[in-house]
Amino acid sequence: MFGINGSEFIILALLAVLILGPDKLPGYAQQLAQLVKNVRRMANGAKEQLREEVGDEITEIEWRKLDPRQYDPRRIIKEALLDDFEDAARAAKESPSVPTARKSIPSSTPAVTPTLPAAAQRLEAGERAPFDLDAT
Image (cartoon, one colour):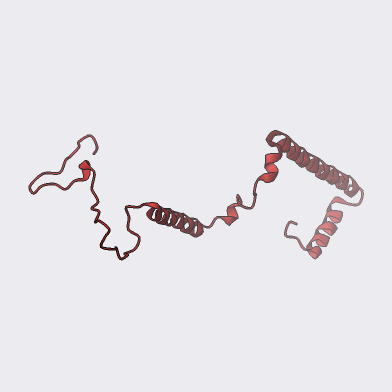
């Protein structure tokens, strides 16, 4: 309970008997029992009050997931990186403009040249790139 084994508890009890004496020990034992009862009653009252205020949602919370001892920064970073990679891979598979693999195209299929939007067209030789002072 407090990191005390059986023999240490017996030694502490004997010291209490010797220090307090047999006439005062029953009174202190009764006060200790009352203290323990009051602490238990307060803890149960706090549980009930929390349950009333929060409702049944508190029983659905996964407390193990919120335990700070479960925090492993390496695992969290790895999961975040894998999620980003999986999202990018899923987007690449769904996007028709990104080729996923080279396939032999029959000669009867017309060649399609991708066109860039007007803002993304190549510059002519010697032409300066547009520069926006407000954007920098």
